[in-house]
Length: 235
Image (cartoon, rainbow, N blue to C red; front, side, top):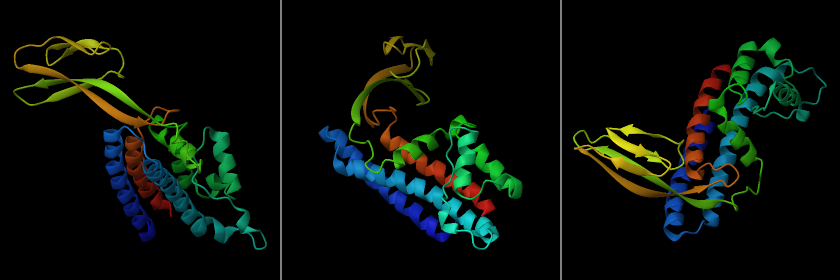
């Protein structure tokens, strides 16, 4: 990762800090501000741009020098591929004049293909990053504030706690010996030395996906940074 990209990640960290401050204010007032939407949009677009810049660095170092003289390099549309299937991946690479990437740079191709959302469920976040960054007037206006009831079971001696949210899969069982019904958010019995309480969490989510805006931005920051650091071995 070059120095310019490192500096841009520092800027994203600053955006995240601003987003957290604005997030707390939104929850206190019950109003999702335009500033919250704008900061979230800036983070998502910046993270997608950083992925594309990494691909651009690869293109400039390895692909562009091999393009025959006279061919219009400016027609290349170079993006870090985020594909729904293998056909889409090849189409994206083809638009970037890299249709033969697998032949000439097999290791780089294998890495890119291995992190695609259709190959690895852990990388489904890339789909959201692609889709939300593609909306220059991002659909943050239909965000909504939701409340989630959580039951917190605490082992008084060790201080260990387990929190179970009402949106978790239905579960009835024991935690530290306490019998918990997740669907009803009820603790039917607690042994000596174990206590329970209920909290109500408020969150701001993307209405279409239900993902927490703040959590998604924070995780996308960490995930994209790790992805680029791994991809940098090919640049």
